[in-house]
Length: 483
Image (cartoon, rainbow, N blue to C red):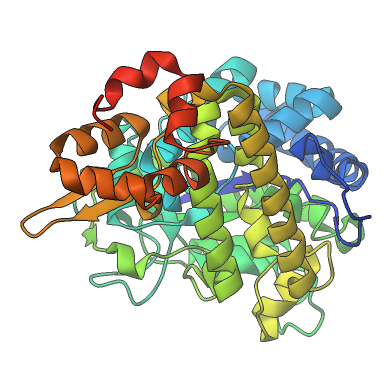
């Protein structure tokens, strides 16, 4: 009997207001003001009613009535926060689903973010924060995890393995070396973590083609779909799709609720069993290892690569800016880091994709700005305002910031000597570098203003080296007294 794993991805984006054309001199004191909360609440409240409540009632009813039925959820921390604040009934239904003992809740990045491309410690922190929230709100400790949008490579697998997870998921991409098809359990190439791959054809039959009247299989009924499942070869079938499919992307009038209601019953009737991600991953012997190096990273979006978020120069520039700002937000901590994390949501980048064809149509459907170019402008203006906010916060408690700050590699102070290369990425390291330098070279860097320029532009001092010494006297011993 083949195991069917129904995996529902749950996330709600936080959209940024089109902060364009404001009066000169306008200042945003709090980056959270940049989010379009009115629109975010309107969309969330609608989705909560149509999906997180109505669809969850159907799932809960099936779990209570059908002993063989099992389901897996992956819910972002943002979605859980919004439910706690705006839709407590939806959260209570998830608790009831968890209490059946036949639902698994996976871990993911708390902010459904691109943290993997920013910093491995931040990626780890977001996942562990997500685990804590799931335990707190649902009473469930995740044993499996995914990266945002099924983004996956060998290094992602090892990072999740090192955090103690037993299984992960990604897209079933046909070109993967040694790939025998999506309906099997695999092992990661470099770490002993089990990997399930999404059957994108069967998943997209529900997610994209369910209400497509030009499709030769329209209408899709539960018994027809169950018959396809029963005829599928392999050990497992991972059907993973946005939970919002049930009542939002596929509207109630399409019959999607009836499909969801009858799918468990018809599947069992057709001889198909159910399993959760971890259960299926550990139950079946791996048929091989997936070798996906970082330069071939895959996802479940568009062409199964990273182009949905990093496919054009503007998206990549935005990621570079976000990565630079991370060093400052991390050093400041608190609300600054929280604000930065809200700007790391993958959705901000998704809206900026300049795609054509079917992929472009999907991006347009989700894009609140109706244009990828407007989305690009909105995000980069928001990043600039976030930068100004971080500078104000850093200078408000400057010495504390200075002690905690370490510049990203691209902004470190570099000195090339005839026989060596010296690098300083923090105030402490600058002092160490100056100690190692021959006195005449150190004096030259000071006299020409190179160090003062770096201190002002990278360490955000309102003056040069002497300013830092006068402001933060406790840090004075870090510098040679002769300079």
